[in-house]
Amino acid sequence: MQGAQNTEPRGVYGHTLSGAVCSATQQISVRVVPFRVFQQSLTTIFMQESLMPGKPLPFTKNQIEKIIKKYPTPFHLYDEKAIRENARAFKNAFDWNEGFKEFFAVKAAPNPYLVRILHKEGYGADCSSLAELIMAQKTGITGEEIMFSSNDTPVEDFLLAKKLKAIINLDDISHIAYLEKYAGLPSLICFRYNPGRLKKGNFIIGHPEEAKYGFTREQLFEGYKICKEKGVKRFGIHTMVASNELDAHYFEETAEILFTLIADISHKLKIKFEFVNIGGGVGIPYRPEQKRIDLKAMSRGIKKQYDKIIVANGLAPINCLRNAAVISPAHMVIWLPAFCILKTLTRNSPDWIPAWPT
Image (cartoon, rainbow, N blue to C red; front, side, top):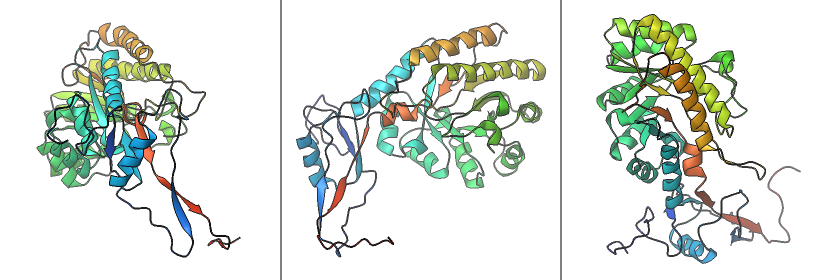
């Protein structure tokens, strides 16, 4: 099928599945090997219907059995059509912001095929390590389409980020001198803000006041002042305070905090912010009683705060690679259309003895 003309999206190994749009991605190349001490059999488990609301299976049992014959389990199977639809839904929800830009968190699914698919949908790459920077580069993403956010960062990582002309996002004030000494300060700098008690986190990511990441409010004023005096001309700001959040209003609160901070810093230091990175954390409904987040409601809330604070204070436009706010929606874009395909071990020996203490 490699050379065949087909309108169906191709899986990452170059095949298509008739009747379903699926991308078979061998993320974990580990074979299930049964222990020889027991009589065992491998049973393929196929869910006839999804346990997650709004997530029907985009494949049939026969299709899965054919794929398993070629690709050993366990592996992840991705619905490429759904990934693209989710990616476009995010962009469409923020069409009021002319240069809105998404940065996919590569660490959420470090798979070059997924990164490439999202790049074709206009997404950049949010990288946190040397390996992720290299993956972004190899998939054709360079320059300010890369947001490099890391902590305890080796020199090599900063050097490559600077070589690729990525947006460098520092999460500690001590990193300013470190970056300057070993790689040189870039013309565009971004700092990660830790709002402390102003903003609650959640049980997944924890609460900001307990986190080691990010500048305090006072450190932001000091950090931007230092960089301005050293010749940096372009500025951005970022925060990340939640994970798998389904409350649209939560992100409006985050935007209000950031926009207010931008206004305060801009007026005091006389600097111009090009972009605000509101962070990621948009979740998916893992439980039957949960509902998907309303992207349009989230966008309306953020626009309300943008108009009230940024526009009213004469600070518009706040740019990010063409005037944008940034959100990294790895959970919703990738994991809603993802399925883990595996086999289970069935022990059928009557004289089976547990291998652990009883």
